Image (cartoon, rainbow, N blue to C red; front, side):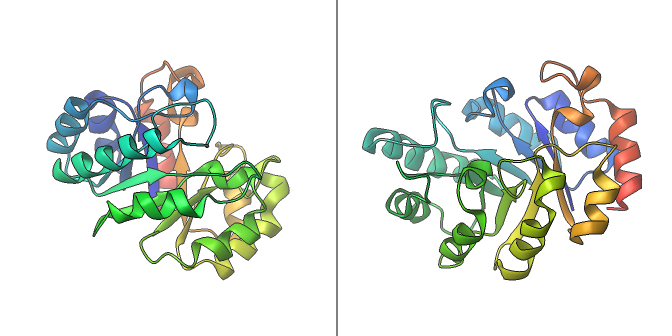
Length: 223
C-alpha cells in the first residue's frame, strides 16, 4: 500500500494517475501538515476515486491540544466525515511525551466508522510502549511512523517490533526515499509506505508531484 501526501486537486489527480493507493490530504506541508480548508477537502474527494484521508491538526506548535483545540478538532472530524473522507489523520501527546489518551478518546468519539491514522507524533514517544497503548483503541486503523526520532534506517528493529505487536497497520513514513526504500522494505518486511517531498519536484514542499518519480515508485513497490 502506497500513500502519498497531497495538498491540492492537481496533486490528488497526479497521485491517482500514477497508481498510488491513497492520499493524505493536508495544508501547510512546511509545518508538517495542517487541516485543509473544507472546500479543498470536498473538491479533492470529488475529483478522485482513490481513498482520501484528511489531516486533523489545527496548529503546528506541538502535539499538545487545549480543550478549545479539541472542540475544534472534533467538529472538523464531523465535517470531514460528512464530506466523504475515507479517514482522518491525528495524533496527541501529553506533557510527558506520552499518548494523550484523554484527548484521543474525545476525538475518537467523533469518528464513528471511518479510518483513523495516528500520525508521526508517536515518534516523539517510546514507540513500543505507545503501540501497546494504541492497541486499546479499535478505531485506530493505521499508525504512521519512522520508528522513532532517529533516521529511519536506525529504527528497523523497533519497526519490526511495531509491525509484530500492533493491531493497527504500520505505515512507514518520514525519511523514506529512493535510496533507502528497498533496503528498509527488506529489513522490516513492511508493506505499507507513506511518501511526501521525496516524490515532489526538487524534493521541495512547494514543488508539484513529480509524476515520473511517483510512477517509478509505484512500479518499484509493486503496489
